[in-house]
Length: 116
Image 1 (cartoon, rainbow, N blue to C red):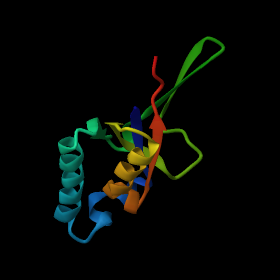
Image 2: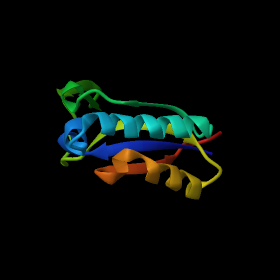
Image 3: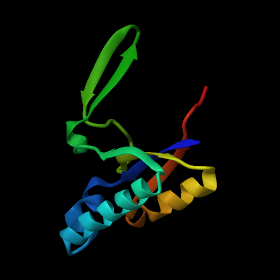
């Protein structure tokens, strides 16, 4: 079954510089996770997202398209990245998410995809 891992957190808390005193180590931790999950055949696709300041929120109200700059959410946490994984079950997906470096400073939401 396929699951989407939504990497959530406060952007400044998940910045490479704030994750560790050694930015190279933070980047290496992320690369190791990607390499391990790719090697296991679990990770299908993923990416970090650009800064939330580049986001545009779209809503349609009464037939009119409304846009606003940035993520318009009543929370400090934002979606900062994602990974699509393919696991046998939710337990395996949770194990994969728990190994993600962002889970140590933010949150990784695990959501199953709708299937036909």
